[in-house]
Length: 274
Image 1 (cartoon, rainbow, N blue to C red):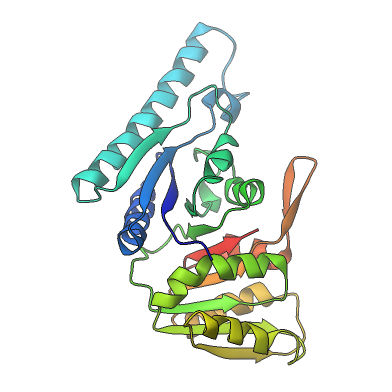
Image 2: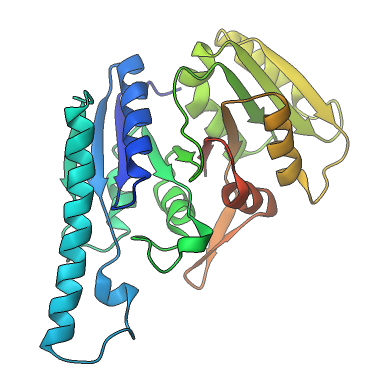
């Protein structure tokens, strides 16, 4: 288990950044951690490669667009600091730095706080649709991904853990221990044979001072992602903890079915790790 002492928040020009900054600061307050808000966005000429004709005028429009986005993000940051989030520190990628540098910066953080992709705003967002999963896979670091709907806050009293005997689940569980230890209720959901890893995971949690309730189901089905989100709603869970499964193929990030379903349909924060 790694204590949470450094938090990296993705900052862009969307209004949802405010919720990410606030929750990251609340976690930092609980664990006496530092928070870096890193502004990272796709350069406009890459986001709109065919949107303008050639010429200096087009280049000027793209630079203005980038400046407007950066100014909007900085305003959101300053307003958050002025509201009392004094632990926040501003950092930004230069235009020459590619977006994957965010994942490199994450190598030196204990936890990332990211935002869910908004499916109906694909063209206008500052980062590509696969930013969350590519950052998870490239960095190997845990992330708390916030849904684009709702306003989560601390303390998180009720946590649901999706357990599977795998590296990804184990990494996510270990990363979540600081949050689990402060929760009032912890639930563990798993599928498969009763003897496949249920007793050891409960014993592991108990060793770390976490008492958990087990929810065991039959063989795994293709709709586990939907079942997890439904169970989280039934239990009134404040966070879902799960491993992120996926790999790269021809520069595309290919997620497993459960990860893809949860990250696209989530209605609560998801703490996940690859």
